[in-house]
Image (cartoon, rainbow, N blue to C red):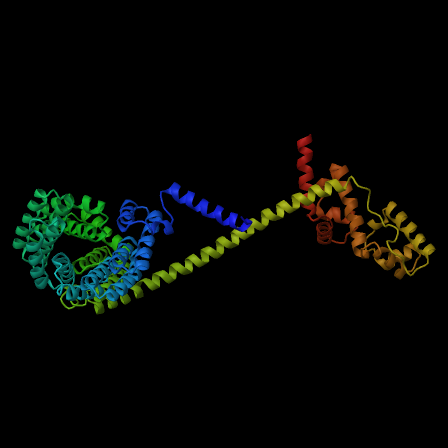
Length: 560
């Protein structure tokens, strides 16, 4: 066996081991398993996205390989149900493609029904209804009654959402008759249809008939031991009680239903419960308890973009509330949110757009927004100007403080360096580092005279210039300049360093001189002005003489 073959075998063995440890067979192995086996694993790992997709992919791949359209459709339906909302639409497109390729009307109808459900999860109701109607058209020509009535129920649900309550009621009644038959495991469909019928009556304003239907649904839910369905129907009855102005009973029923609806992760009906609780508390003038529920409706809308026609009033309430408080910022916030809500309502509920009772229409909202923005602009401009000035002042102060402490750190570093340098030999001119175009004897003579000049501290004389020093040393000014420059310094730097080093030595050794003024020290060291002395000290040492004297004095006090 070659090295390559050994490597391939090792990789294969490793993958097999890892998959076996995770309880997953490789896709190639799964394709030899039955559909029942793979489907059981899909159901087992439904909550484990890592594992379930291994089996989903294997199921679809096996079905395609064997060209079994029923299994392909079933596999893609599982992909739609178990994928994220946006991705589910892509899987539903593949589902439709293979269903239509099969030419089986049951499969095609089932596929369109599944795609309708995918759009429903995205709250795209017009697209949802289009797919449900297409599904119904195909299923009508089949003998699959379950799928027919499942399509009817879903169509009723969307028609109800879109405001066509009368047609929805007729469909719900048909579904109730079908789903309640013995021999069918359709309890959820039966109870959901009763709840849908109660909701439709409620939306039409027939609270009495809605309550009778809801009471029937609650009784049936108890009989069939379906607690979650009962809570949804209770919520509808709570809304009925609000409509009948029985606010205390409405609050009680709505509060009973909410925990299970929240637990079911149903943000849509959760929002409905919040809204009608807020409205009920508002009706009994308990604004303090009402407002948090309206804020919760707003929170769900901002998170999920979910709004339905009756929830629109939530923002009219919030706008009026802050209008009474003269809080223009909050008014503007909720006006903008209501405009966004209207945009969604006009898209998803275009059939209802002319029927929604509005205190504020779009024109009024835009005018109110413009007025508030105008009123706020003056105050905001003043505030912005104030904040800019404050920011500039704060930044300037911060910069000044930063520079001050940076300078202090640098001064401290240079001070320590300066103290160390005092232990080194005193500054003096040195032998040329490179040959000069001057006779060596002349150079040596100038260097000798400069050393005597330094030793006798003649550099302390005032108004000393290079020409005067050349005369003093009885030499040529040009020659003198070249010798000094050869040490990497100009005459001025050379002279200033001698004077500053003299002053540093004086201040270090004899504390009495630390009491001298800067002006007195300048005169003592040969400088014409205190400023020239201070500037030369800074250039030479990196610190001001006042700082050096202050630090020396403090250390002297510590020692003494």
